[in-house]
Image 1 (cartoon, protein in one colour):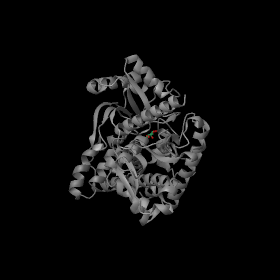
Image 2 (cartoon, helix red, strand yellow):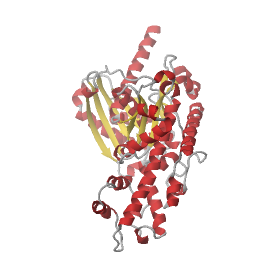
Image 3 (tube, helix red, strand yellow):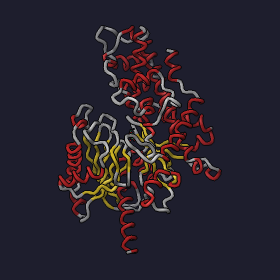
Image 4 (tube, protein in one colour):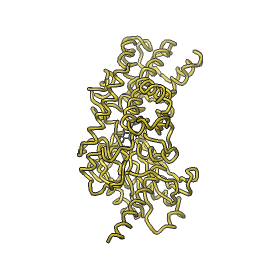
Length: 476
Ligand code: GLC
């Protein structure tokens, strides 16, 4: 057990190496123009935040690892509480054939959901003569080339759509709208991190980071346009000089090399047997999608040495990647109950083909494993947040920023549901920055990134496009 504890330990010098490693990846990503296959530091082309005065109905679509959500967002007045959201959800099972279908079938399926949503809100839709604007929250890497266009990169999260890599997301949507005869216009493509940041900034204007911590992990933040060297090279003509900042999707999930990430033997085992080896190394060390597997692998080691479950393998450990992080979360949540209550909760979680009933010692060891893995996960999440705060050094840590809150909008089931995850991340940040700055850091649950965030970005993009058209008309 002690050797497992050591494998997962993440001390301050290692934490520093990770923060420094991430910062050099930011610099590299901002300066690298091409994104063939993989890309980090992706410019979002979102250069403004909403004022709160906006009105109208906007559509948002949110595709994640297991759900498609489409929403109609009616912005009614200055206050967010006056937003009306009508939504429709479709679950995508892990073995759903859609995941391996072709692009046409996949996009037709998505657009059918939008069609159904439009029927639900028919009154609002028919009152406008212009097509409805849609913000597409795509929780997968894309190489964005403008606010509404971008090449699809490797998807992850169990999707391997045939021939989709390299295609333009805007075109795929517009073609599907045409096939189905829908009057909808994709105005913006956004990553879930960018949607989270915008939606949370709408609630709390001090928000400076959008962080996703669920099945996947990723973050967005506002970067000075002058530092996005690759943007200046690629898009000189499109970028307005007055635009001082742009939200950047870091795709921090992809970051990581052994130079600074302390990959241990279990991380390496997980990666080697994964459907996408060598991809998303950082994410695999700490995401909700992988924590259960890390506990499973470490537990199997103990079982093989007869130290756990008397050497018996529970059925729950039979298949790689299928021991769910929610079980870890459950085990930690009853950790402080009496032994009797804990055993009552614990015993039904594991089933053996032999007549074996887990003992008190099994319970203690397994709880320890969960804590060892989740403590490291919290510190890894904190290292990402710390590096993003430092990346905004001047604005957040400079001499004229005293006492101002540093707000991070966080979305995702691992952050929201895993016991004390918030406190552990915050504590690691306080250890890193010291008490004074630690007190200014506020990690807040951010919801609605894919719905209200997507709609707000579609609205901002539509506004910007109209303004540019008006300017064009004036100067011609
Ligand atoms: C994965 C995706 C990334 C997304 C994150 C959180 O890491 O590659 O685009 O933001 O999950 O959902």
